[in-house]
Length: 267
Image (cartoon, rainbow, N blue to C red; front, side, top):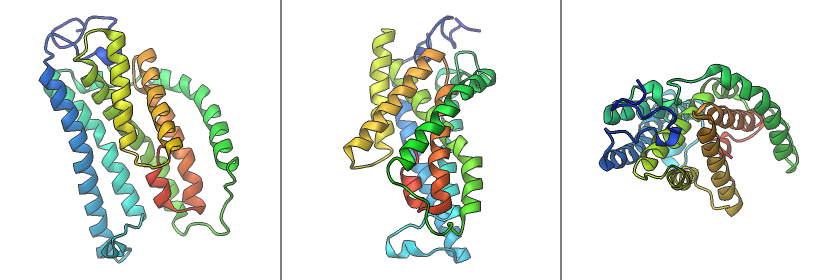
């Protein structure tokens, strides 16, 4: 129960949830290193599996030339690798601090679906307008022909991308933010520092040389952290992240190059 050696006192904000009698600084180090390592290992393993499958099936051998084609298999494998950060983050928290996986979702001990539904009523219209302006306002127009794999990509986007977005939220706004904040006693200072560090890590995971795009990543990451802090859970951040990625990627699945979509999945 809250207030035990495992869980913090009632009223503890989300980012400080790991600051309990069972906390030790080295646990935060293990959490951060493990999450970052899991990201690279899962990416490598899933990408390798996709390359082998595409080569065996004859779908793509471009990797022999040093390039990687984003086929449906490659797309699914890459995004599923990010989705696997959900159980990784939950299990690390359980193993190191003894808090069961459900406490990673929110201070209420699970995803609050009713709250997420209420957020959707507000966020969906906002994101539709935002994506429309960001897409057509920049001069983007549909191509003359549909992508040959448009249907497969569209299905994969709708089915997998919400989990990919959730995986990044559990890893960054969940595991990393909590681990960093746990070593800093003042609640506000711990939130600010954990937000800045986790936002930097999040941005580093989306490499881009455009200063404007990097700034967008930092602002989005910080904004999601504020949502998590003020709501006490990951629901709003997951929803916003998923909406952004799905709505950005579907037009590309229909007419564009999925390589650009995958590299800029959070842009």
